[in-house]
Image (cartoon, rainbow, N blue to C red; front, side, top):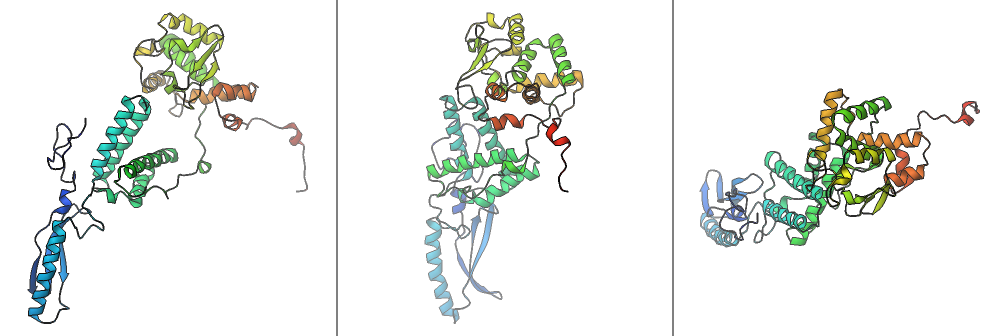
Length: 402
């Protein structure tokens, strides 16, 4: 919902009252400067709002260096006049910048959220991209609320971004990849803030990602006997989910891509599924081979009797008009895990890793596996193949100088 175009109403878009930090107004709060002289000395005193502490803070300006009580009072009155003028025009002693056009982080996030919603409504952001950004924004707001306040845009600096990433990575015990994903979000967000004039430069420019060379992707393949149990169980209890397992295991179609598949994407004459650019992760239109037994299973389920524009996985994983979320596959996997008491290290996505590795072990040409998996290079495909059980006969009897 769009926020009301006003700086004085103090109301949040639609239905709730904004907090005291929703506008730059709190930063202008101050008490009139007054001259005081007592045992502590001669000084000018006033209070001004400190955004870092979120409260009014006392400010003292000592004038002890001026000799003579009369001269000291006259000097103080001149300073008070200048202070009153500066404070009236928006100066704040606790902010090292002009706050005439001060923006709050919350206002910036609200504007960015509206932008994300518009991009999604116009079809420029996919559902998962939109959901990802919304989740990122929610997590950033949680951090600001519970861990480190950031009321104004000038506080959205490099130190704040680094602390937020440490909270994501260390305190919340997430993976390096998740930390890198949040860094990418901060880069996009700060770039938007620069475009809007909220910031002069991106605070993330000097923050580096954690190199993928420092960690290996945790892949836990499923033993063949367990894969067989999964197939038998799904055949009896969840045949439509078995089709999803087949597409992941044999065709390496990602769960997100499966949610976009329609009946028209299947070519039964050639035995392929065409993954269109608009549905593919790599934004390329590419075919994948559909094994005959998978085609027969889909025929038995009546998949191709549905209208061509229907999704093959909709409500209850049956063909329909409504597109489902990838989470539905994970829900079915959890039910299967419970029935078979599977180890939690085996994920639904593990079927893809297992399928690729088994193809490599069964001497299927690496190039064919690469094309089926739609990998950008052979080196990526080879990461899936385990070589621990492969012995080079030329080396078994080798003896060197050592």
